[in-house]
Length: 103
Image 1 (cartoon, rainbow, N blue to C red):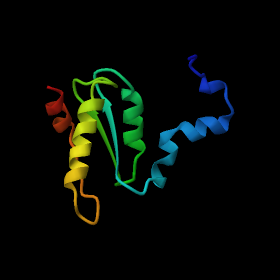
Image 2: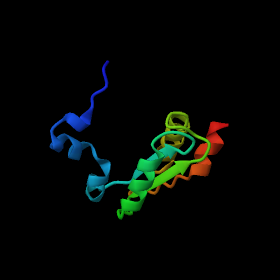
Image 3: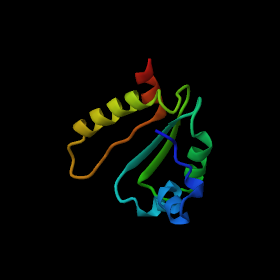
Image 4: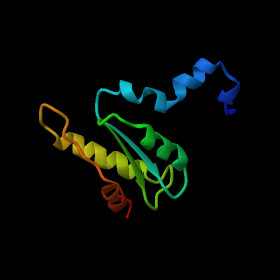
């Protein structure tokens, strides 16, 4: 598959793909997790600085890359979803919890 250069597409496509433009529209808890060792760290920090939505939790995972934090984070999130039996979402996740699962 050939990567698509979105810079050459219609500007509306760029707007639709820019997560930072949609932060105010998030209405349910959202966790944005990125490895700090390699990946989209600059984008993560830009998103973190722009975020004013308390439902969005932005975290960098020390020692993880864009891919090595996926499985541990997914397992942690799934376990917390299953344990959260209240009427309102009450899930909290920390980078330390993800790092602990990476070992």
